[in-house]
Length: 83
Image 1 (cartoon, rainbow, N blue to C red):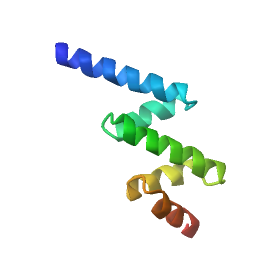
Image 2 (cartoon, helix red, strand yellow):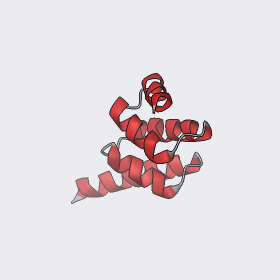
Image 3 (cartoon, rainbow, N blue to C red):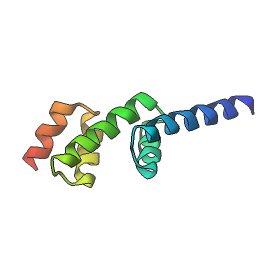
Image 4 (cartoon, rainbow, N blue to C red):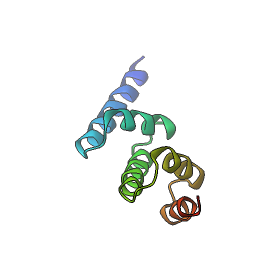
C-alpha cells in the first residue's frame, strides 16, 4: 500500500507542476495517462499541443499526430501541414 501512495503523491506533484505552467487540468490528466504518468513526456506533449494550437491546427488532429510521431516536433509539424 505504501508504494501505491508514493506513486499517487508523485502523480499529484507532477500534475501540480504542469498546472502551474498554465495547462488546463483536463489536458494535464489526459497527457499524464497517455504517457503512463511520465511527467517529462506529458510536459513535452502539452508544450507541443499548445504550440501547434497557436498555429491554428485542430486539437484532435494535433493529439493524433503527436502520438503517432512520439512527440517529435518536426515530424509532427510535417504531418499536420500535409493534412
